[in-house]
View 1 (cartoon, rainbow, N blue to C red):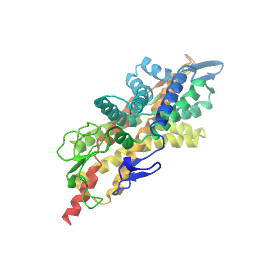
View 2: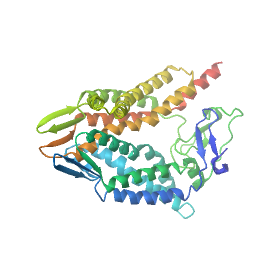
View 3: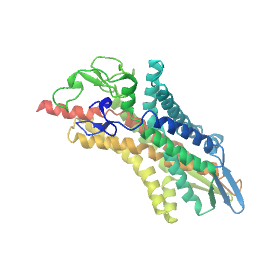
View 4: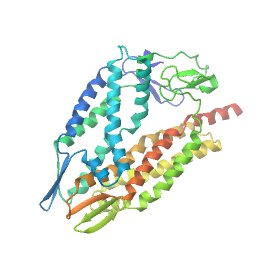
Length: 400
């Protein structure tokens, strides 16, 4: 059933894998705009006051939200500063502004090419919004600091909580498929074969990976969103292999070198990722230690191994259990961004704890390598074409 025909509260799903394609949410033209305005206000407030304050042995330090980024830049970690600037400020604000502009002009005159460009931009930057991951990083930082100092949350922290919640509500209140059909209507393409689970390519159709529209095979661009059409991503498997090998190389220094360097009364104490987990466990913070271990050690490693296995199975032509492979792939896409928690924790601690000769925390070289692992594995998951999994099953059907 096309998204335009759905009643409020109804959803449409893929008949082959059961994945939800579209859902008709209530007031999709109004709620995102309201959430967007409120999120912008909360963002301004999150930069107007103190974010966190830290005091130990009569010496105190306050930190604003932007100091998490400026401290990294001042200490020469330009790459980490750029990552935080984009994932926490630049891309979220672009996303909010683009949605508000598109929905505000949905019934007014706006050049179709501008609408298509904004729509494509929304689809591409959504996975890189990490304000919720940063908020979890703040909470973990609190647990790390509670045993050594008094921590107070400023007004900007609570404004940032509101900013995070409103951004999540904005994203969840708008369906991508509904938006494309609302802007340009459903595309006209001949119907699939009688078999509802038939592959689009076998039926002479190609699906757009941006807006989901079906077009006739042979067309170079999507008639609805203007994106380039490929029946399968060109060079996708080779690109995924290359990115995964790069992430494997970076994973080694990310775990061997210190991710954080603490200087206390002149005593230098570097700490690796596993060292931080062991310290938290020794302090009795078992849940936080488990979260850090899973997010920073297990998840990146499992994601790399899962994608390597998927690439191997596709390249070798093993078509058994395609639904299981697809669920594994979607899981890797979902959990990948949460590995940035440890990088955000380091940024928060480095921005907050700067007590001159008493105690200062610096980012370690592993922070850069680990951020590279997370970002590269995310790109690797995006470059992998999950439709190759179903091609293997289709090939086995034809051989039968």
